[in-house]
Length: 70
Image 1 (cartoon, rainbow, N blue to C red):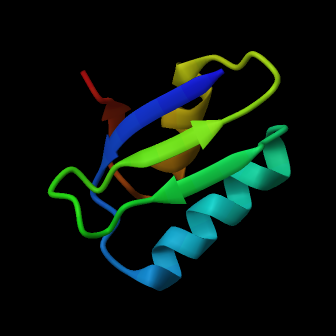
Image 2: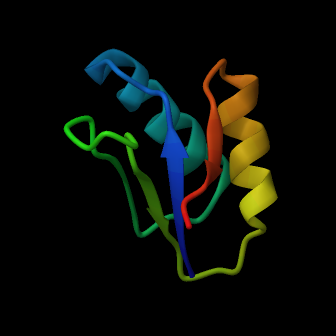
């Protein structure tokens, strides 16, 4: 499963913290945040199914905006 989200993550430090948190709670093949993109795109790829809302809640609880990218 692949989830693609719009965020407001702006620093490498914050990006690393979000990726670490996601990786610790979900079975993740890859996870990245494109800080160069205007939508600060968070991409999560997992062999397991996950609910997009779970990712949104986690990132939001870390203090960042997060929404599914249309």
